[in-house]
Length: 217
Image 1 (cartoon, rainbow, N blue to C red):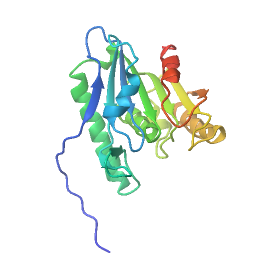
Image 2 (image 1 turned 30 degrees about the vertical axis):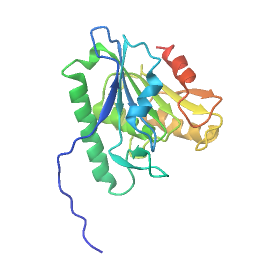
Image 3 (image 1 turned 90 degrees about the vertical axis):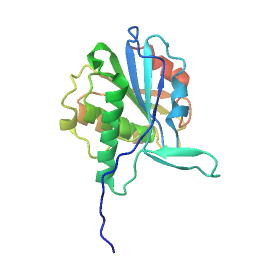
C-alpha cells in the first residue's frame, strides 16, 4: 500500500446570501444544507423571512458530485476518508466565509442564528464550536451531533442561548427515540437542554415549522 501525502493548495469555494446586510438588519443566519443539496437551492427555504431584518448566509459542502441520473449536482460536507484533513479544510472555509461575509462588521450587533439540516447538523455544530459566535439560537433539524465535540468546545456559551431539535414524525433516518439520543448528546456538550419540536412531516425542511420557530425570537 502506498503512503498518503498531503499538499496545501489555494482554492475558491462558494456560498450564497439572501437579503442585503444593512443598518436595518437585526438577524444573521448561517445555514448548512443536507447531503446531496446545494446552497443555491437550500437558501430558498428562507424566502419568507423578513428581508429588511434577516440576512441569510448559506454555506456549501466543499465536495460536489453528480446525483443519480448524472444531471443534477449535490454537495457533501465531508466523509470519513481523510477525516482530520477534511475537518481542517472545513474550518478554514467557515473562517473565510465569515471574514468576507461580515466585512469587518461586529457580530455583537446582530442576533446570530445557526441552522443545520440533516448532514448539515454536524456541519453547523462544528461551525459553532470553531467560530464561537455569540449565538441567539441553534436549530438542529433531523441530523446527528458530531462525535468529536465535547463540553470544552462549547465553553463560550452563556447558557442563555436557545437550542431547538426539530424532527418530522415520518423522517426516514430518525425516530423519536433515536433523535432523543442525539439531543441528549447536544445537552451534555452545550449544557443547554434543546427544545424538541416535533411535527407531521418527512425528512425535509418544513417552512411552516421554520416560521413557528422564528416567531419565538
